[in-house]
Length: 175
Figure 1 (cartoon, rainbow, N blue to C red):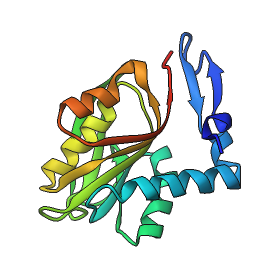
Figure 2: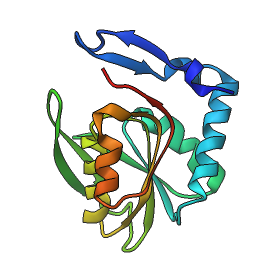
Figure 3: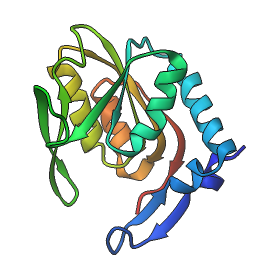
Figure 4: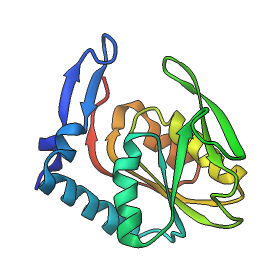
């Protein structure tokens, strides 16, 4: 099955000049979604993993299913002001401004090996912030798995230069 056939491309969304890669067409197909999860589970076996983390919100779709199948705890890395307990926070730059992601302080124990899953990597700013959250929590980043890599935006390469192991299921050009 070619998973690329299930990704819809939308021009000028969310702003002019952006070619948005839409995963909703992939997850609405039970066969494509199942294949995606199976591929992530298969690739996750290349990592030593204690816990699975995902970046809000589309990463949750994939990581929660993987967490269930691997019988590993699931950690939500959320946008600012979405988590109620004590937090670690990291601010980071986006193409169009700044953002913050957070994790509960009690989600990650010292030396936990955490695999981070997300739907897409572009420039890598959010993924790098996620890694910082894991490190602040005294965990270790096992690596990253992305469904889509926008290869010409360099995020995956930047994570690799920082020493992280990175896997992705498919490549597309960015804008």
